[in-house]
Length: 265
Image (cartoon, rainbow, N blue to C red):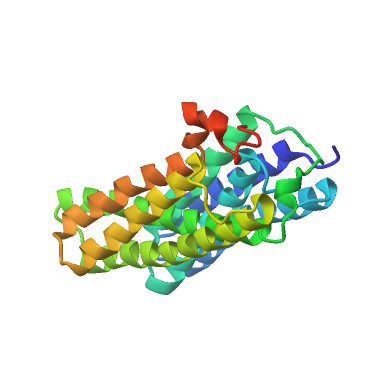
């Protein structure tokens, strides 16, 4: 294959690492901060360019395997951190986001994906791409909300947490829940097109519904004025359920009977 994933992954990680170090060293220097933002953005742009070339080479959207979805995840989550910094002038989230992106690229580096051009019939539905893309954006936003939750727990322990920090986690979770809802609806439409039923309580579908309920529970708890620290714990731990829905379900015994098991790598 002419596209070198290893080079693209290391280049992205190098951009994120150098941008992070420069950002931490910038302090009051506006020039250094802009340079750091450029490097951080460059890391994601490298991965987006790789995904575009990979898509062209495969002659299908690279959304089939867990490894392929990790590429999208790594490209998008640093952008969430940068958008939060731009909107609220909060810089700490982007460092966690870039660390997560580098972690997922490292998994792919340790377990290179099989470049398979074949796309099974169930994945050729027009609902497949919007379903997966919307879900990925939702996952990225909810991962960022979980990171914000852990960070806010730490700040609460140090008695330095603020309402603004809590608000960032809440808005990320709220927006992520909207995408999660659309992903669930698009998934039902895809299932009808691919298998003739909107919903069949397949293990993957069941865990996706459980994850949706978990975040619905968070929104209800938030409206009921639950203690701020408890809400941060809720956000921090809720993402674990989403991880089970994303790839953990593939390793459960029930996965053998799932129509959603295409490739576990």
